[in-house]
Image 1 (cartoon, rainbow, N blue to C red):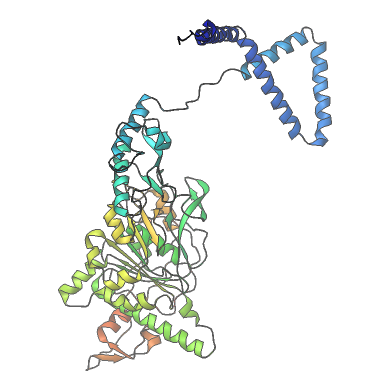
Image 2 (image 1 turned 180 degrees about the horizontal axis):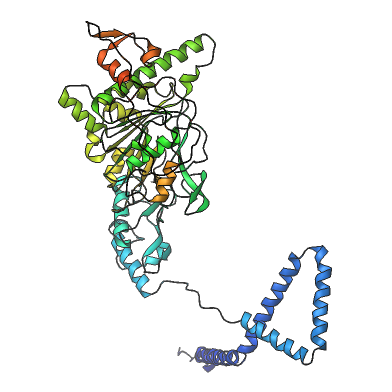
Length: 573
């Protein structure tokens, strides 16, 4: 049977419909061009009416009557003025035309350069997010990048600032090595020199990469709003912690997210270890901790570097000693060990008798040890014990005795830290430029960001116990006696220093023939022994406090708290 041709109306209908649509579109464009002023004025009148309605709704009821009376008076004046209604109409039309003018077109998609960058990043991820057996791979060479990148943002230079990636479920996102490869690739392809944060969503198979803003460096040393037993180590990102502290930064008061370290009998991280590169700010961190601890406790400082970074604290109320030499450091740490034992014994006896712990056992004692590796080398060369060995008792029993130990060391001497120090310092800080491997070796966990090679002093990472790794910026606490210190920072540190105490005169000590001397524990210090070596007694009792150096500028005098009952006297430094 021969096929009949289709009717003409059916064969040519699609062409007629397309032609009709083109004619209608052309007519609509022409009408839009002609009526554009009217459309603009109409849009402006609608916006003006909406604004007037919102103003009227926001006006209190008791003020609506006077407002209506004022509007009626204005209308009456305009109606009586010659050419008033015409001028009012022209003004209204002009305001409507200005209000309804066309806004600049908002960018809704990437341009050609940004598309090329996204395609290049997509092609670079194909070897990591695809397998040959995948029947419908999400990542494939020459594939569609829009299905893998759901959200993206660029800065003014055309570099990525935020990217949301959907990856296949079979990717091993639970392995740190696999995740590190992806983070390293994204860091290299998105632009170096910036700090990126990677948020892995293992349940949804999503990865969000974002550029982190630099932490502010304008916060200097000051009195922070904390309770006794809390120390502000520094400041971090807003979404990283739940607590903010009011601070003064750049002559303005603001609430900054703070990394607060809690010490005391109920703390799970009673001791701290800070490691960094030379000039990274570990000494400023210890100086900041000392200034925060002095109003509520006593501070014993042992400086292994011998550079005089803590000279501003020498002879201050609450500062038991600032030791720079090996003999003084050993004597002070030996006293600290005996003081820890004495506090434990006194508190135990008080509890057995049903009494509260003595006041002198409840006042916090801080032991700040800077660069112990240098003192260890000197002690080994002199045939004397390593100062870190004397920290075993304070580290192991310091939490119950209100004794806190803070150790600062550099990366090149980190292997000299004893096992006791590494075990009992559960609060960790890394300052200065460091590789992810170095950060993980100290903190026990790699950060979720990419460290930058150039960072300001005091910038690094912190981890309290088993918590997350946080970015950290230590408040600026430089040496006020350093000529390179700015005047504002110098005055900020001097305002926090306690008053100097009167010099302690030397005591005469008789040396018996047997080389040992029986001393009264309350007369010499708090050594919890009945017989000590003559050298130790002379070091603790005979050593004079160094002469007080005049302050370079006047300072405030905050309350330093009660004077310590048991304190060693500085021997050296």
